[in-house]
Length: 483
Image 1 (cartoon, rainbow, N blue to C red):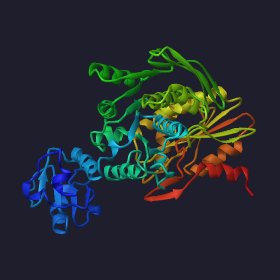
Image 2: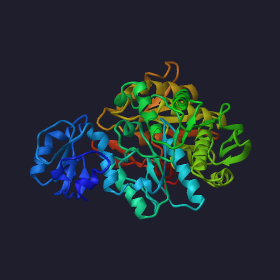
Image 3: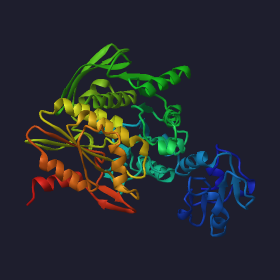
């Protein structure tokens, strides 16, 4: 591909560069090979402009800059970060025009909603890809990157995945759109078939600094969507709905607490799932639903997923039938053991996530609710006391431990969480998460529910620069079957 072809429809470039052939596009200086186009992006810790001249000397075909460097083979643009994914899309043949894309954003529920969408469309006979916290699946099987992939990959990897999906004739793709990915413009000006908003609670303020910035990053998704599914039970969802109405943009609202375009009635939560009536107000039709995940927040996730797939062109009765066949989502309210007592693991790692999970489990716990939880190191420390407060509100026994401490002292993360636990509420502390889980299992009595919170599907623990294998499912199985 020539630079003229690559920049076609994007912006004008120096005429002498139009016939220059390029072999790749990247913003990572470590990936640059001979013939590559290097896009200079300024990050928090590294500015690509600082190595532009050196990369040209070592074989890069050209560089894209945001600040003029007066270099040979330099293409200057207004915003290099924004143009980067657009260039990648062009380089890989605009793959997202050949598959139907759905995206979900929000603090909690993204993984569940996205994977429910994928399972529904697969059950309806369509090859479907997924990109998110559980890993990536281009349509041929899930690939999980040990050590934890980012929720939304960086642009080059993202567009290579989209291109691979086209090669594999994947028809649909559902992606988790993280706030950081949206703030960093990792997507080109995609035309998502449908985007959905779940909720917004405090998280990632170490990056966004304010809730307003966090909200605006999330809202940015809906400027790229043909259809939008918005949970108006959430105050920020209501704001997005109003924003879309003011733009006269397509909008579909959902609710589990009141009226909306799609809303639920007669919700019955059980230990092994939920039953409810889903009503389409505009079509004046109602559908009985049986769903294998409990919790009102999972009912909300299921409704959003069903409506998303429906808006992609599938009859709602077929969508509901497929939803009823789904067993659940890995690491999301997943039962690891059910016998004399019950052990559940979940990804809840914010105060809102803990409150929703534990309030649900409290209602179905016959004896004591034991909560094992902890905060991640080198992540938003401001939310930690609120996590302790939320857990103390519902759990009968609190075991505070760490998540992935990274380079932070694990005792510090514990101390921060404990600040939110009322003084009259006893708790246990373990810097070793395995020992915390063993403690919970050893004290379990008949009718107890143990909630392992924070890691969900993850099979690792990050300590320092090392990712150690750590699978809570294996730990529970080893305890129950020591031989």
